[in-house]
Image (tube, rainbow, N blue to C red):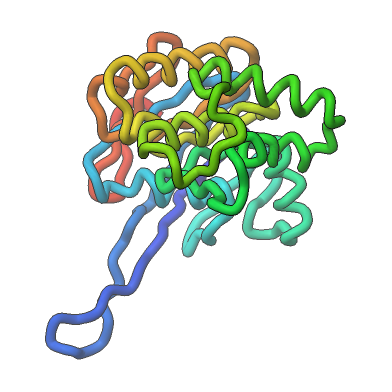
Length: 228
């Protein structure tokens, strides 16, 4: 499903003395493999490289060194169209949610169903199903801006799961949620895994860092440790 071999990603940061910008490694010589059907949690402190890793897998940014294979394809060699086709089979729960203020809650969640060509009837049926699962069905016609951060996170989770992705990348899935909502969302992710979705989840929260059916990988300062 995901095969990562010796990848590194660097960012330039301004020098304090206004000299030449420094090159800082967000990830350094990282290798890991996620097989189809796995549930893998990458855990580490803020700034450890978790979000960068997920963005590289998604193809949002390119690796500077090494090889990253996604669903049998070298991500660096994919055209925009080819990458878009892969994304239709995947889900990404972004840390910043990326919900559209111009769309209703229903329209936000329905977007992946539209991308895979689902009928209107099937889209409506499935959208209300996942909204019910996150306790947000009554908000379907409201605007994103009217919701709290925790409620927006629930909508983002519903959108990520609505089209039954074969692979879900989840970056801090319980951000902004209380304990009750957090357990609810983690239960939904575990159910998605049990029904065939491969999960790669990044978190800095110890309370969700050890999935019962999966394995844990630790990351710190751009380097992986523990089981890979």
